[in-house]
Amino acid sequence: MQKSGVLLNPIFCAVMIFCFTVAHGQDVKYYNDKADESYNNGDYEIAITNYSSAIKLDPANAYAYNGRGLAYTYNNQFALAIQDFNKAIQIAPGVSLAYANRGYVFFLNNQLDFAITDYTKAINLDPNYAFAYHGRGNVNNSKKLYDLALQDLTKAISLDPENPNIYLDRGIVFNFKNQYDLGIQDFTKAISLDPEFTTAYANRGYLYAQKKTI
Image (cartoon, rainbow, N blue to C red):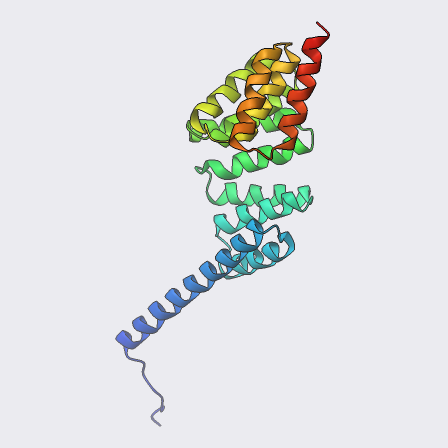
């Protein structure tokens, strides 16, 4: 007895597979874009949900793991953040971003040696990565390695000269080295870049007061 059935046209199958792949990719992009928008607006819970949807559709999506890791970081869920950065690094070990972001979480956790290792790895992968130099400079400052901190922060400024936060952090290092005039210069530069930078005003005021006691 002859078995009845329908044979699928190979060309039709190829077209269907292509259409599914494109649609699948568009869905992943949709969730990544929505997650990025929520993250940039400070809606970290919503960002986590959307990055998770992207990961469910594409478990090898290093971008989504890195993004969700950042959302976890700013939602103060550090253990989950490190897990996601670990996964992003596993998927894309040659990309500097997740190393630097994991280094920042280690810094927040006061795991300073791990932070230095990650920031240095990020710099080795991308020697022009201002965020990594900035982060490593702050870690060196916390370790009271002020000369190393100044080296890193000065390099970060050369790569990202319009970032007021780097001038603020270098000014803080100059304060610890009792180089008050240089600190005041950096705080003044930070204020010129961001006239509403209250922390820079406060630090500059403190250094003006310190100079009067000398």
